[in-house]
Structures are given as C-alpha cells and as structure tokens.
Image (cartoon, rainbow, N blue to C red; front, top):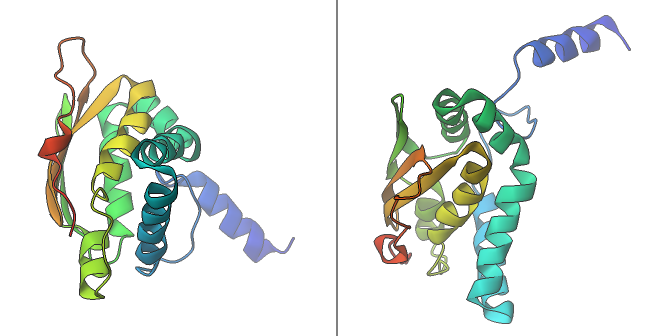
Length: 179
C-alpha cells in the first residue's frame, strides 16, 4: 500500500463518522429516494402494511445497529451528532438539530425525500413518513430511548427522549399521510 493510501486510511480512522457507512462524496444522490419510495410501495402492495412495518423495524435493528450502539454509548450527544451528519449529507434538507441533556429534537423544515419525490411528480407511498418512526424507534430502543413524531408530508418534529414506562406510545395519526 502506498503512503497516500495509508495516510488517507489513518486520517479516516482517526475521525470516524457518526454515520454507519463510509462514503467519499459530501452529499448523497437524491434519486435514491425514488428507489426507497418504490420499495415501500412494492412491499405494501404485495405483502401488506404489517410486512412494511416489519421491513422498517428490521432496517433499524440490523443495518443501523452501529448507530444504536453509538447512541447507547454516547447518549444524546451521539444522537445529535448522527443527525447533524446525516442531514448534512442529504441533498435539499433543511433540518435544525436541537440538543439538550434529556432530548434531541429534529425540526424538519424541508424533508429532502418528500420534496424530491414531489418535485419529480412521483406518487408517494401514503405511509412513507411512518418509516421515520419505525426505523428510528428500532435504532433508539437499545440505547434506552424512544422517538415521538408529529407532522410529516414534508415537515415534522421528531423528538428523541428517554424510554420510560409512563411514556405514551406514538400515535400514528400524529404522522401525516404523505402525498
């Protein structure tokens, strides 16, 4: 291995990303939202709503396991760092990450996925915004956290808080139908 490669590998290892994947481009490609939406629509149409929810939970517990472990280790700081890095790489996102000792709140002013799909005339899976709850709930649970979402269809608030026995469950009616 040449010195330039070693230097790059060492510098990457010294400053690990809060994201669960490595990517050399500073911003993702928005056309990925087309595949995501089509996948959701296919699973729902051919296997039903519960299969789609299971798919989302499985993504949260398997693919995002490294994120869950960091959140468990780093607490709210890890949650906030992840979301800042995540939305920095999402094309067209306008999201404020507000961190306190007992909560991380995402104020999604412009959801990049919904807006890209809408801007390109795509029929959006009606339950599209629910994926944020199911995936994030699966990531948050091992860290002793939960998520509550209000809004959707392009703008929402997502609150990451401590999981407690008296916390009211997420009301799915609080998550808007996408269109």
